[in-house]
Length: 227
Image (cartoon, rainbow, N blue to C red):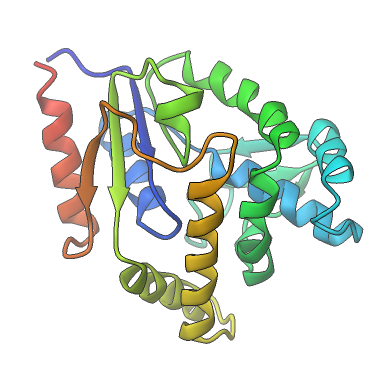
């Protein structure tokens, strides 16, 4: 079987992209790379440094200078990888609600995207990669062999994110998460640079009524078409 060497998975927040990407990469023996962690790391760093997220120039400078690395997991605490910012482990810090609320604004800045996209593309072009994000199939790797757009309703995505945060002991309301996701959808889909949308040649998967194993099986069937 001839396998697709570059696979992209795009979609809105909490649609299950990360779970699918990790599971599919494990099945194939490929690198799993969730590009969203880079934007989350910049958002987290700006918040910790006290830089208002609306200060585009300062946030962009931060994105150009921060050293972000993604490595295999060093701890058995449910993480799919380690995320390091200037050597500091921020894997779970970047999943906090305040980062959720700011990452779409930060990722909309052209300078931030330019600073991070080149690195993402270099990694992807090595091949044998499952790369997850919001503009991978449209901007970062438009030449990808297989492009998947994973979608789910905002209610289902809110329920998933609420459970994830509760399982980690984070106190937040389901209504607040739903509002946050709707706001992120608006920002992601209407930004001038690399808006969230399916690539013209992407296969759209709706995961509303699929669990993680069923979504993986659907993606596997897409891979198996490359025979």
